[in-house]
Image (cartoon, rainbow, N blue to C red; front, side):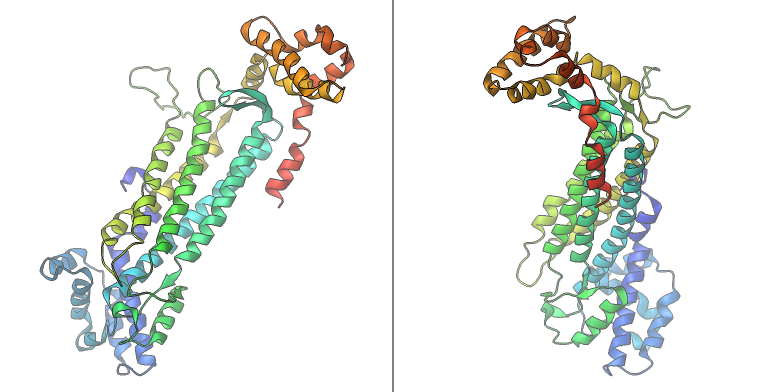
Length: 434
């Protein structure tokens, strides 16, 4: 992923040096286990660890690979010069996939922990802003059309609940890829003791793969990247809401616009929701990894490498982008400018139409059929829609059919906005206290 959409702590996980460091750790722990179980001479691990402090030179390894055409062999050839004669015991009984697959899962877990941390910070921010605007009334919309009053706090609470589900999904995905495999060619352990795998996995906090067939099954990774795709869609949903609320004719909320910031190269007045738009685009990139990861599940026999080129791209790019997007959304929410006065202005633009359901229900409770009640209320509502100066409740209060059923005191109660916020506490309790 390009630097513009990356955070250094996540990028570091996917550097060549970090990869080689993990490869070496896996090989060293394997030697330690084989020495422990008397498969190689005592003191071998001490000799192998001579290479632990080297600054892995990617250029040198790449030069060796130009000849070997094999990345793991090139790495083993490179470290052998620092180990000496004992290097003959390194990688004993192992195959390349043992190193590559175990390393990939270690990297995905490290990346997941940063994403998990980011989601936790986003949840804290959403909760803070939701409580701040718990009773900030605004008009709710369905199909983009005025519906009934809600609160801005409820919008944020909904985002919190969704992101909390995503946090739980991520934890499940982390569990899926918390496996390692050191089972040798075609996964039979013919040339390596299963206890070596158990020992190495324990050092990294992994569980030995029950059956690896030489590679760790890719259904695990498909699940992992699919969950990142779901998280991306949730990010985009929130970003899209902010973009809509930022529109000039709405302007109920907008991104923070810093001093010196420019919105347009041509129009000095512009304050565009560029960060939210950016998140919409980044979410598409994250979801782009889902289909390839699903297609990676199908491999030939005990293994092939058709999945390899895919994962070399999507593993770093998708985790880096997800991490960046979550942190950007957190910043947007934290600094989001809210306009309660505009929310009330937009509420008034409905001309009281949001009371239509209450009138309908009251009429049915008073004895009229639902069909007749709906017909009476809709006729008034359509008149209000089509004529600028009409107000829904004024029309209701002058309608003889309605007044014959509902008295004026009851109509005043219907107009009270508190009617629409009376269960906000209940919803907040469900979201934040369960």
